Image (cartoon, rainbow, N blue to C red; front, side, top):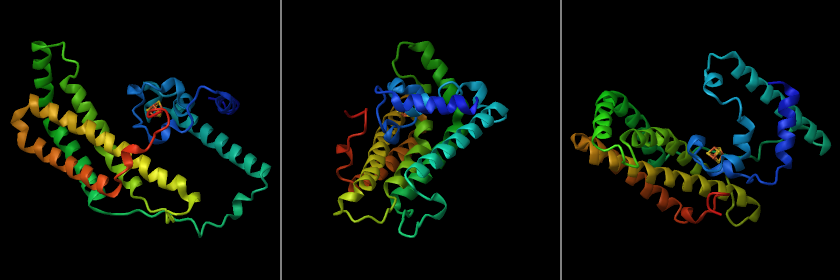
Length: 249
Ligand code: SF4
């Protein structure tokens, strides 16, 4: 991709009225399963170079495209800064705070991600065999065993990432209206984490129904997810009221 093409793509996107501002901030990043790809600027920006060939990390073009995106974005930031009379080389960041917070929910969600990945890897063959049998018995099921596994895998670390972000300490004064964006970021992150937890619980429950021989382990995962959910809701009791752009409009 050429720099002029990407720059033009960014400019064209800025003019589009059909895009939903900020929709990608609190989504689950699962673009293949998203019903808002046509209205998402983030998706539109990467459309065309996210095919299998370009995703190959050994593919030179992928990294060349990424370099172009970085260069164009940096140039545009510098141009805007100049337009507004800002000197980006001399920024005072001493007042800016964003600190990582460690607690039961962040720790447990991290452990859950690692454990569930390990468990699926170790039992992949057995799961695949069971999926084949279930397909032969009833191929009309809306949800398939492999779909449930895909859901569990997709959210395995996503939950932890969003929970870490939800608990991020921006050093805010909650009574100060200027801090609304930071408070919203905590709430929006908590909400998408809770949604991912609920979907993971549903997928784990489905797995439990179809593969009762793994009852002990699956119940352990379900207990972990329920505990994480309880902790997040205790910290952010109003998280589910947060309106995510596009998804909750
Ligand atoms: S809103 Fe949908 S299309 Fe856009 S980044 Fe999120 S998942 Fe992908």
